[in-house]
Length: 226
Image (cartoon, rainbow, N blue to C red; front, side, top):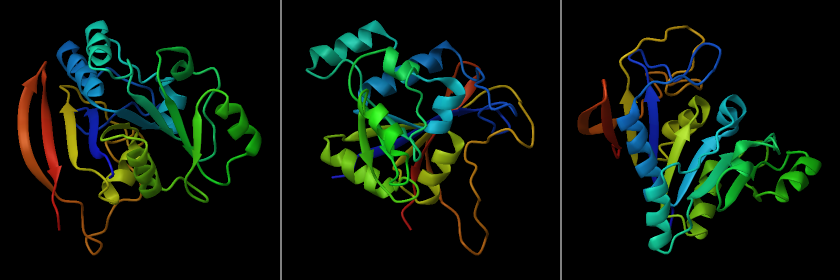
């Protein structure tokens, strides 16, 4: 069984998730940070693309001691599984994901990834080949399901989110819209990629909920089955 996939992201009022320099920017506040940590704690795995790791050196770990304790009390690992989509095995060996937090780290690579890089990463994480030239997300979801992941949180970045949304490989989207404008034609949006034409059709959503948090809005959509 494939996991239930929740895409979670924060974007500015004009739809940007970082600056034109591709640098992480504080978009939400403390209330939303707490919400995101709670969501992580309630999921079996948290996923990002390699671009996010290279830009932000993300650790993907839970930061709230009470949530870590809750997971342990429930018989779970203290940290959800941390997953990186990394076709060419570019994951830094000294990255924060390896240095901070406990639990399983899983890196999905393609067959064309350099063997020496795969070998080096395999000393620090579980490395799984899924796809020929690039990672196949259908294979990834199948594999994560086999590994016991029932709920997956996908955090970004824009390229990975395009891959999930364009292929309709998600169940729910939660976007925090912050009260700021970033601008910039080259600044990443919630999803980038090549985009749809009208002839190809779009990925349609069903609005589930809107909630005011901090100075912005949390909008929750469900995938519309077509």
